Amino acid sequence: MIRKKMKFSIYRYNPEIDSKPYYKDYEIEIDAHDKKLLNAMVKIKEYYDDSLSFRRSCREGVCGSDAININGRNGLACLTDLEGLKEPVILRPIPGLPVIRDLIVDMTQFFNQYNSIKPYVIDNELMPERERLQSQEEREKLDGVIECILCACCSTSCPSFWWNPDKFLGPAALLHAYRFIVDSRDQATNIRLDELNDPYRLFRCHTIMNCADVCPKHLNPTRAIGKIKEIMVERIV
Amino acid sequence: MVKRNLTGSGYGLTSWIQQRVTAIIMLTFIIVFFVFIIFTSMSVNNNISSWQHVFSFILIKIFVQIFFIALLLHAWVGIRDVWMDYIANTALKLTLHILSILWLLGGLIYSIKIIWA
Image (cartoon, rainbow over all chains, first blue to last red):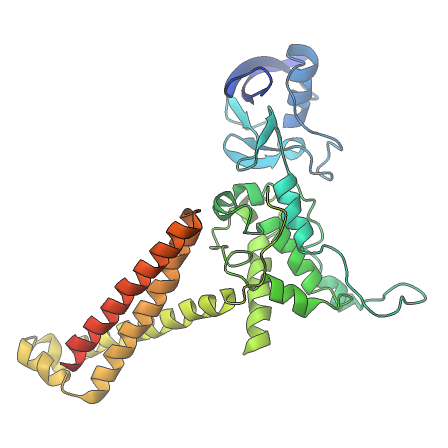
């Protein structure tokens, strides 16, 4: 059953063929069971234009592969309702990262920043016989932080990250930095704080709050960044 | 793409605190200043001799001088932030930093001349 037709305007760029990027328009038929934007994108690729390239995997907002810029706003295609999208729906790659092809960007810079915060628990003591236990209160500190799926919606909507992607960690990496600073099992808190105390790495954040605005998991990196600053102040005052 | 991470230069936090503390000092000054203007004879008797009388008190001079120092320290962090955000070239950035410092120092000396003359 055909419900309606929908118009899309999609950023296209294949560096092997195209001298510069361009937008290609599509008008496709949407069925009643096509609820999410990703359904429409898969349909375009399957029935209208198989040269269209984009990343996607779990299609339920867990893997974070299909982060794109939808009508000027970063989001996950699989979590975005088709209903209510302004037409033509303009799809672009997430901004600020080099485009590999169409909606696929090179995430190397983003993951370099993430890896630089040492995203793992550092515990120099002997391995416990069983697991490292946490109290309920200690575990609750990680709520609203560990849900991050590293889709890069936040960092690529952050002007500070656009300006200094090589020096500023970006909201996603800073959210994870906070996650390990407050983790009761981690022993490297001081080293982590030392490495963050830098005018670029942490302090390029100007509390613009685009990160919290676009996060598809409704997390708040700005709050985490504020908490890191609080802990830093607590350490020296 | 550069792989190394230049981390922990160690002054980000002090600048951040400096900006906030100086903001509080300036806000306090502005509130006290307007309260002073509104609730004293300054509001009706607003002329040069009454201002000269106000600035004859040493505490007032110190108070105003602290405001200007706070303003310049605050402006330094703000201006440097702008250069850090928008200027990528290190040599150009350093030049702009130095020029900003000279400009702000000039402002400080001028404020001393006005207040203490």
